[in-house]
Image (cartoon, rainbow, N blue to C red):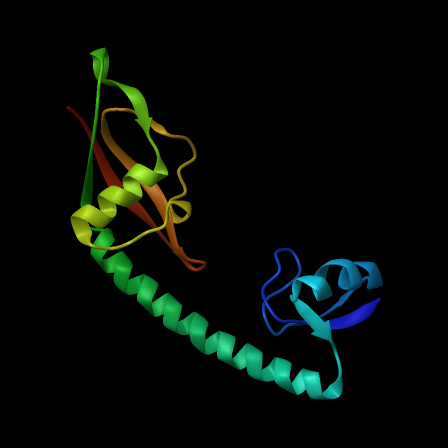
Length: 149
């Protein structure tokens, strides 16, 4: 085992600035070549503490920004037009990318399609509640109204 300081967040391992123990091979073959970690030493541990402090400040700022965006998006009803056939069925489907484009067009808030956590594409006309993760601690439900053309 080797003790390393993470230079960036690694899924399943830790966040930037964390000091973790990993196997020698994992560190040598993946973390070090990718620039995700550096070997732990006394001087580096002080640097890791500064990285953690900066990450905490940045995380608080991003969370506050996400909460401000949530105040705009929660009361809004996002309207998406789609071609329909009989019985309210869509000819295609409404995916996260179309919802993200509609949110930007109607509210001016830019969401990435990956932040919209749509379990499966919407295939019917009507109102749908769609989860969107704005921050790791801030998840909202968008009210999406799909209307036929």
